[in-house]
Every structure is written in structure tokens, then in C-alpha cells.
Image (cartoon, rainbow over all chains, first blue to last red):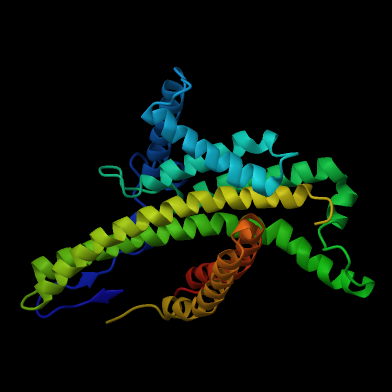
Length: 260
Length: 69
């Protein structure tokens, strides 16, 4: 999208191409910014988790309290309440890693200097969704057997003539729609939020420096909107990390449950 | 002013899921307000519905980029 103000060069709204900026090399095998950010996130998470769980005390310090809070959130509201107190234990490491990796990577979107949500790249979102996809099908097939698992995807108590109609729909939902929407939801939210901040910042810069008269006031408003949207983004980023872990738990629990 | 009509189309396509998600969470909040102890059960149901409604908006997002000129 482009827009021309009175008598100066035109403003090009940042598009999807502006987000593709390889650091080293070019083409399919370039080293890109999300790779570096993801590596930084991995190092930060490992360091924080190892260092702060080294000296555990019964009366927790501030850091330990925060970590235990995040762990309790995943363990109690995601693991125990959704998967059920019988089976949730083996999935806790997966759910907690998903939550904490997504949370740190998403919050990098508004973190000064880095300011890049890794999951605004579709590839990263697809990779984490693939982990969940393989997990819930594997545990489902292991629990009920191949035939039982695919027979169990339709809701029980359905009239017999409806089953041939519903089964393909449910099959597509489980095999295609669930993983696709899991990846796209995360990607879409991070990407749209990042692009929105970019549009407000660039528009503010353009209106303030390259236009005249009352447009400058709009430029100031645009910058104020950037700050406001950043706080909104923090909320979205936390929510998306939580939602992803919640949906992973939901899919695992529906793969494990006896009656759909 | 120039642009792409596909993006406008996505804006229109997002209206439906927007209303749908609003209705789902309105019902969820209502339910929790009336019966706070049912929160856990209702949360699972609400998010299942939310996921189905949001899938439509996500399909719209994908198609907006697919049909972009």
C-alpha cells in the first residue's frame, strides 16, 4: 500500500517483504534474525532455569517464586485440569517447555534491542506445532491401537447413518485443521502484531518528518499509538503462549480420552 | 491511494469469526458468573468453540495472501 502526502516522496507501508532480512548469506540457507533470536532465547531460558533451580529453598526467593508460579500455572490449570490427574504427569515437560519457549520468544517481540517475535516466521510456528501433532497422535494410537484411535474420533452416541458423513469431517479436523490452525494462530498473531507496530512507527516517522501542517499532529498520535499497542502486544504475546500450551493439552487429552 | 483488494476481503471475512468469538466468550463469562465452580469444565468447552471459530479467520488470513496479486 502506498500513500502520497502533499508534495513529497510517497509513503510505502511496510509489507511482508520488509520482514525478510537475512543477516548472513541469501536464499534458502541464509542465517536470519529469527535463528539468532531463537538461539538467544534457548540460552536465556536454560541459564535462568538452571541457575534459579540450583538453590531451592522451602521459603522461596523472588525468582523462585516467579518460576514456581509459571510452573504451577502449567501443571495445575493445563496439565491436571485438562488432561486429568491420571495421565498428566508424562506430558508436563512438553507442556512447560512449550509454554516457556513460546513466552520468552513472544516477549522478545517488544523487548528493547531484540524486538523480534521469532514465531512471526511461519517455519518456527510449524516446527512447534509439528511436535504437538506427532505427540498427540502417537499417544492416542499407543493407548487405543490404530483402528480404535481412528474409530474413536467421532463422538459416541451418534446415529449409525450419520457416522459415514461425520467421520471424514472429523478425520480432516484431526489430521489437517488442528495442526494447521495451531501453527497459523501463533504465526498470525505474532506476525500481525509485529507488522502493526511497524506500520504505526513508520507512519509516525513519515508524517512527522516528511509532511506539513496538521499531519505532524497525526504523526505524534501515531507514535503514542505505537506505545499503547506495545502494551497491548505484551498481553497478546502472553495469551498466545498460554493458548498454545492449552490447546496442546486439549488435543492430547482428546486423543487419550476413552469416549472422545 | 493504492492497495490490494484481497486485504480488504480479509477484513470482511474476519467479521463473522469476530462475532462468533464474542458470543462464545460472552456465554463463558455468563456461565462462570452464575456458577464459578464450573470454571474448569466451561473453560475447556469455551476454548474448543473458540478454536473452531478462529479457524475460519485463520483460513481467511491464508487466503488473503494466496489471492494477493
